[in-house]
Length: 407
Image 1 (cartoon, rainbow, N blue to C red):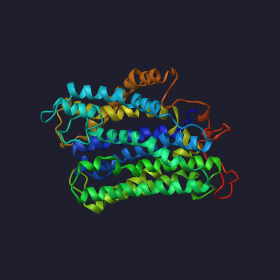
Image 2: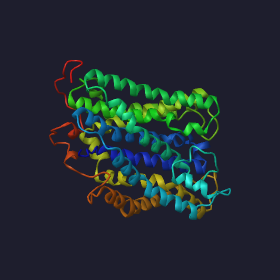
Image 3: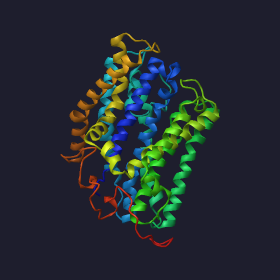
Image 4: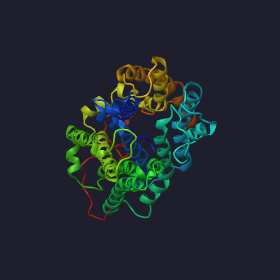
């Protein structure tokens, strides 16, 4: 199955990585706790939700395409191999850098670093490893990677992709978006903070991406007719405006404290639900992009930033720790700008070296494809190209829709 590229997602990956970097600088300097922009800086962890929605969309879509075209879905072992090639090399380098370069406030044994390297850090209590604090989300994402093939089989087997079948599966995925807030409410009520890092609390974010993938392919094939979503594809600014309005609500204390203090049940539920809506509104215009959206988010700069975004995510907390040591900054003593710009620039440099020197060569070697790029440019990235099958579509087309219940 030929890989379809959605160029506007490149820029969104970069925005997600920048948001995560910024919120961590804000926390370490104390600006996200009591500064004038505390709410904004604290809630930029929304970048994680954006990453999860994009992952759900890109990884589930090949299963949907195979279902609609009645072809074989992605094979399990190559899928797991490709996921490992994408995330493990840079992660292990980051773990080694943390071991040798980052100072910890308390003794950290080798088991703590091993848990970081094996995606098990969210399941076992232990001391916090400086330079690795963001890796909880990578462990949660790996749990989704392992679940997806089985979930996709359940959702794409046993029935032809009729209009009724598509609508039923969209309803199931919508139900998953309610599971996250419910899980967070229960976890908060039972004071089990570690379980708040597990996949059930975030399955709704992945489900949003899966639902967008199903809708996009169903519209392209004519299984679903026009709806209000088609109108929204033409006005991305309005959709992003809705995301901004929801984000403004999230920056208030209604969504919980800005620091590490415990939330109330209502705050935990509201924050998870708001992040679900925000991420959905951020990503939706990028899967059905206008020419202007592609020109901005899918430009050459956007492709480059998307390629290195994983490296920025993996290395930035190590860089931040080193910058704090270099300038003599202690935790929560301010100086946001002094730390932000060096952290950003050095993180981009390290991520660039990692992508071109390690990540891309490993992916090409493992895939036996010397031309492979995460954001490779192919004929399917041409907005003017005329598609000839479902997998060629990056925008829905209005086609005659068969009667309900017909394939």
